[in-house]
Length: 222
Image (cartoon, rainbow, N blue to C red; front, top):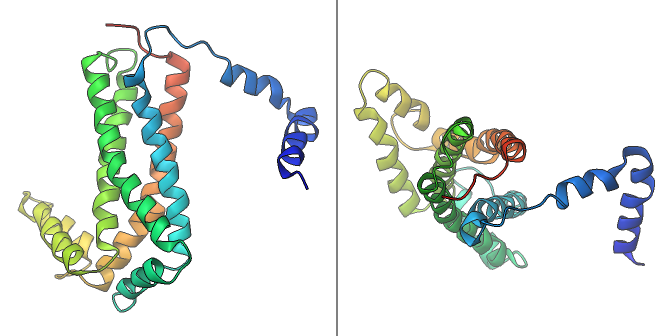
């Protein structure tokens, strides 16, 4: 059975009759690209592709990962050694996350030196800075989830850094750890942030980011 033929037939047949998808797709895919656009303009798209990769691989990892201090490390070992292609899925998740930090930094540097953060794109720059902070938050919260010695002590040190801030620093540290030490509450909170809270916030901001790019267009040459 030709599944691709069925899918395209449904997309351009039944759905197109009701939603006029063909014209909508043509408007999206056939928009002219300015002549000055080059390779350095692609890093925003690279970052989004890596984010989608992390979502897909993260969902697959969720099917086997257990967010408890007794089972988290063993579940990671099980994924890596016993689950078919588990090592590959985990590897994709790991490297996509690391490379995403690099691509988003290159994207932000390109925006800065090209002056694309200026009016009327200043609000989109603020959203981009927020997305950069969210990428860092993804890295910090995800680092604890394997629950090994490296992740435990790195999180212990990282979570103590806000405690040096005046007024609310100690309260923020307590909120992160859920207590005086990094334990089950900390793992649960980091897991919730990593797989639920941060992804939904990121998706919402990405939608706003793309809508503004679509509305304002790509900035002009230097």
